[in-house]
Structures are given as C-alpha cells and as structure tokens.
Length: 221
Image 1: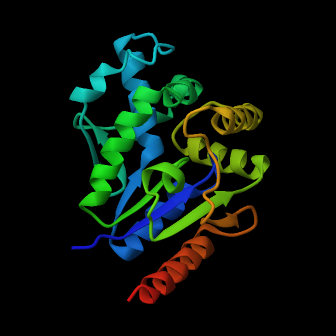
Image 2: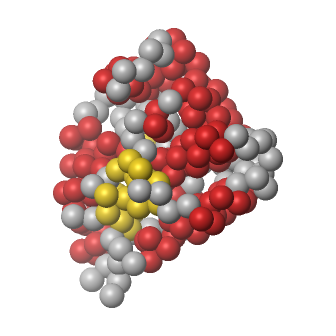
Image 3: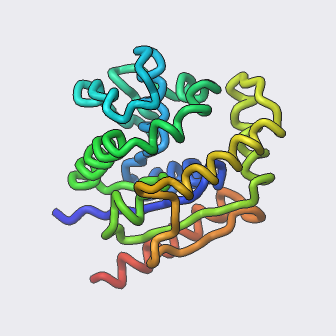
C-alpha cells in the first residue's frame, strides 16, 4: 500500500501545528507534531537532570515511547500538551534539538511512522530531511509580531505568565538559532510552496492546502 504525506515547515508561531492538525482531521490522516517530540525530549532531559549541552547524554531516547493520539503527543504514556509549554522547556528546546544524536533518533522515529501511515507532519526540517519525497511540501511564515501574538493567546489559555514582549524576543531568538545551526537548519525546501499566514485565517490556509493536495494526488494517477 502506498501512503501519502504532507510536509509543513516554518518558524515558531507561523500556524503550522494548527493548520497541520486541521488538515489531518479533514483528510483522516495522522497528525505528527515533530516539535512536540523535541519539546518532550527536552522536558524529560530536564526532569532527569542531565547536561543539556552534552549531545551524547540523551541515551534515554532508546527507551522512550512516543505515540500520537488525536493530534496530541503522549510520551511514556503521559500527555505532554501542558508539560511541553513550560518556559524552561521553551528556553532550552533549540539547544536540545540542535544535537545531532537527538535529531537523528527523532528523525528515524518520524520516518518510521510515515512509512506505515498517511501523515501530515510539521516541523522545521520535514520537507528537507524527514520527508524528502512528501507528496506536498509547504513552508509557512508570518511576521514575528503576528507569531508572538498567536503564541501569547495560546499560552494565556494554558495559564502562562509570559508577556507578549518576552515571546517576541523568544521567537526571534529561536528563528536565529534554528536558521543558523549547522545540522538540519530551518530552511525552505526547493520544491516547497511558500505561504505567508500573517493576514490569512487558519481556516483559509487549511482549505488552501487541502485543495493543493487533492490536485497533487489526482495528478499522480
């Protein structure tokens, strides 16, 4: 059986996760939030008290279980939605996700899921590394101000105390870090379709990607 995949990349707060989750639901595909996997890894590393600067201190990943249910990540049986939003996790996830052994392990797990399921996967290196042969590749962007406001509203609903200014600074710092790292940096795949979501609603973006995907799939038959 041939499985289909959609790769959505872009910086933090561009709307990737919400659009990917909605699109997966519309297609009845599995939604894979790869960013959640890196945040969960960071959370577990902090909980274990390991040296986050040591790329080889993440051996616990070999015994860690990741499962996606209804678009939410469960790590070792625990729903990570709230835990992943802790500020300490946000402050350290770029560092953790820059480690080659960590990226290699999680990419391996992500590819294994896509090999056996129809998926919509979002992250920062999906179209360039994880799903190089995805049926549809999208690179979503938005202004720092718009992305910070979206993240602010999302975190406020979860009880976060971070200010809008702090989030703008965090997002800009994350952009700079992710785009400049040596291994699997954030960048647009050559065959990806760029979409700026600054002035487009989530519903409009979801419908747009759905239409593009259906045209692509029909064209393959």
